[in-house]
Length: 369
Image 1: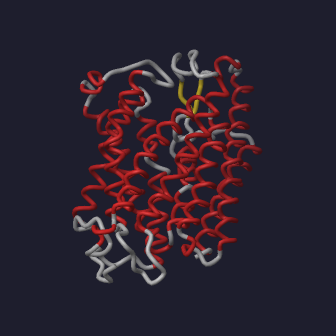
Image 2: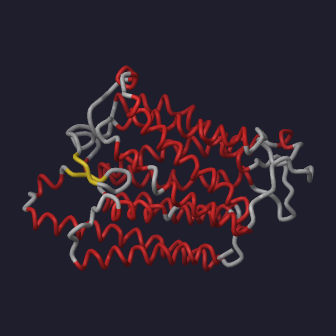
Image 3: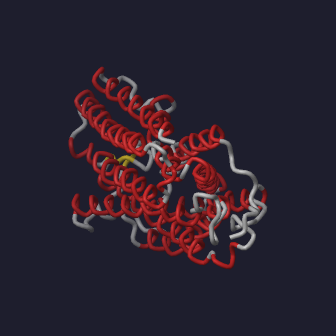
């Protein structure tokens, strides 16, 4: 492979860590737009979300990335598998993301977070490390960081259950009323409409748990696929590997290309809520469209930052740091939405422990380089 790179210089180690933390912030923030759009069927929001993802990544690719897909000038001659890997990563992510959001709504935070997000965190980091073992000099620290993040997810679930239980006792909410409240993709509660799986479809809790598990396994696959697409030899050369922004452009292109079929299925057979149509999508207000576009743009900035960070730190490290995004989502819930206002001392202790574990996970992962 040619040793003349066509992509701009990679970030420094400090810059790469800053980009990883930016991806963490973006991945933990985009779901606020989904919360603001809970009056819409999720399929309608997701149509605009995918458009926002693609357009943002394309703008960055054309401007900062100079429209170059491959890391080296002669990459196109041997880059077929790398291109397919990046496209496959986007297609897999798109399906996993839809299933994960549906799983959270169907199974609740208590099941969806450990089964879905926990599986994606642990399995995704392991697979990415297997593809890119040179990403860390101290694997033990990396895996300790992953373990700390998984424990933080479990503590987050316990804090949510403790707070909802206390609120139920205080407010006199019946079990039936409580069961109609389900967490959205960011962990915030909203009313579930009758219909979908809850309305008599997929085998109740068992079916919802299966959806969460499948989403976690699929979500764990997109990072190793991108790691393969961008993998270089120890001396920095490669045969057909992709530049970080080239990989992100192909990744988001696959998200866009698979979204019409995905959204059409969600509209016709929604797992939660009532069916809808593209005609309804066309009638949305500019504000409703803007929510999806904004969410997609924020998520795309996080993903581009994560891939850029991974080009220097290693994708296993950047992925593990980014997957601590529930910490940021919880911080939004704590400070902005005041979800834990009036929480018991036990709940407050659990929330504090969760943040400590997430911060420990980030520190351990960063030090594993």
